[in-house]
Picture (tube, rainbow, N blue to C red):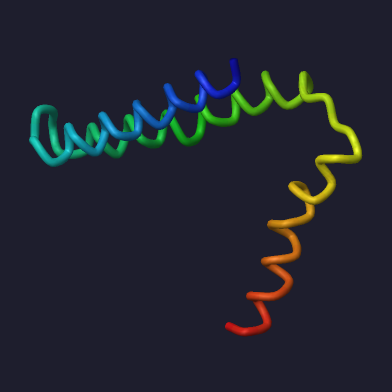
Length: 77
């Protein structure tokens, strides 16, 4: 269910990029469509699906991985 929503969002981003390259719409329309997806659709789907998640201890590694990678990589920059 949540995967379908994110697939739709990625498809919309792809359409925005495709329309920009093919120049089907005016010059700024791809930017407008991408901003709508990023600032409205993505947060709306996150707010819809995150409360439905069932977290348990087995997901601890998945949750910790991005934080650990960030803690390792940032000092290297």
